[in-house]
Image (tube, rainbow, N blue to C red; front, side, top):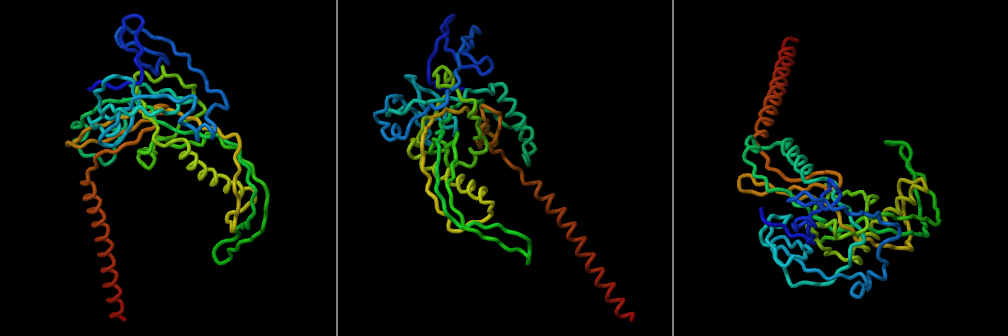
Length: 360
């Protein structure tokens, strides 16, 4: 398997080999001599994050860091690196067109990280269990599958906290009864609705933002967020953000407005609304730039590559696998037999009714 790009290059104090973060020990481990170096993981304190002003002036931000970037020529994935040379496959699409670029554009430093909890061994077990339970798979699927190994990737998120205040006015309805007796009772109301937003999460990767496949494993527990420490990245790849904080904040506001609308309707005990008007005011907005863990793998069957993702925090898995459509023939055969029996029964009943009519 090709050498992986790593974001840092920590050396073992005993033998000089490269250390990697080990989810099992929660420290840095040496694969050669077994030495383990402790990493002091600090819980991220409340209130940490970038202000809207800092997002607006990101180019001159105090926490701006400059990093080299590797770009996949096939899918466009961008990964932060510190290595001088690379020889690796893209973890997302399996392409070997991952190359270092001269792009050293500054980017904000992460404010938090969710370290890997699922180990490589646990991830492989999750993967093979998933393979064993694949639905509608071809008969030779398990014997002819070539496993490509796991790659650990940290994916970027923007996570927003804010206090919101919304003056509202609208016409609210409550539906009663059912069928022909159903009616809606309406009332007009106004007020101020306050909602505290915590951990509204927006993917910071342009490539993953509209990927339905990705959404199957994208739920992370932000209560376990740790203070950013580059040591936790050793041995893993890290995708850089391609959706900046301002763009993510606009998406977040759309989601927040939906939360506020639902909250107002709950307050007004309404299941329908007309002419609702409100415009949230925001205070104490904090934008956390967070890295979240994902195991990425792929496998090959009949010269076609299938992608699988595993949530590195909770073990959720999603992926694509080959399907055999032979089972459809059996289904259609059973349906044909059943429909034929029903049709034959109807014909027989028609003949019997005709004979009874003649007999009369």
